Image (cartoon, rainbow, N blue to C red; front, side, top):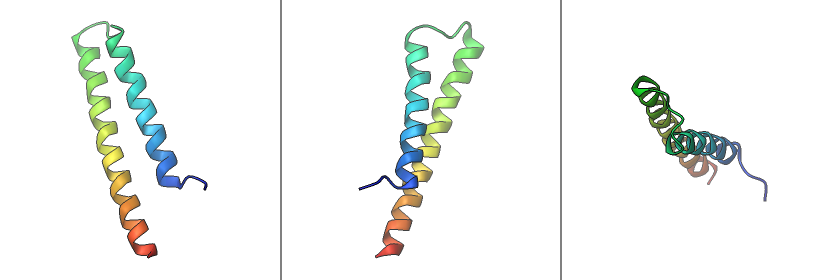
Length: 64
């Protein structure tokens, strides 16, 4: 079965967040300001994933 647009978006956002987390773990934040920026992006992407999941749940329940 093909992935829904919600699943594709969720996977892409998750991959982006993991890439940033990996960069943080590898010490790529050059200073505290960049660290804060990267953490903020991860938090924002986490919020986006939550919204995508909620939309997917609503969409799936509307289809039934």
